[in-house]
Image (cartoon, rainbow, N blue to C red; front, side, top):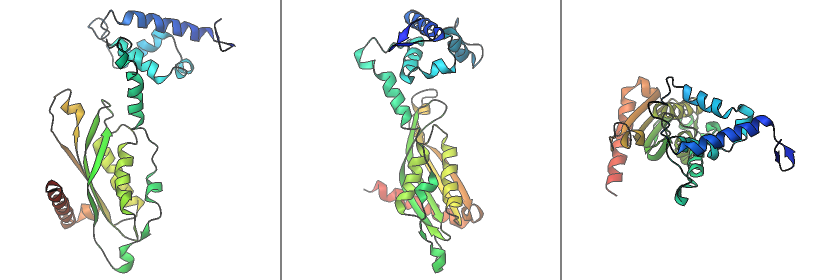
Length: 255
């Protein structure tokens, strides 16, 4: 039985590692995604991988993520060990993913806020435009970037201006997701979290999963809008917000 720092290593793990090394040695001489190896079912690739290295969850949990990624890259024909400049590519990719896997509590960001305008008999839109937006899509793990425009009509509470931008950044980097869903989360936080009269979120972003792969259509902007409360029920409120966004865009282009 092999040992690791003086402790015995289970036979199942030794066998798994040997099988993994054997598969890595032969990976560079064949195309794993050729017709011969094309999986018949979407999940069969993962099932085959797990079966080949004969590992259970406990064994897999001991393998560093970059090691698994290095193996996956090699299996599709990209051997990161060949060139010194790519030896750390698996680690860099994991680090990149971790930037979009952040714990985020929107209520902690919003905090207690301040006394709202309604207590003073004042009603109006609080809006921020041209907030930098970034995310990675859950389908291809490729980034999207652009601008977010958010607004809400306070009832009894307003929050610091920086909180709106923090909501956009927080939800965008919380986990791989869809632009539509991120907009929904921001709108709900401003509407339900602040108990506001309404909220509206417009996100405009270019998705690199469209611009650099697949349809390869660079420059296409995807726009999504979510409305809650007054913005859903009163068209004039939506029109006023649209005018604020257009004005902010015009000022931004003249800088």
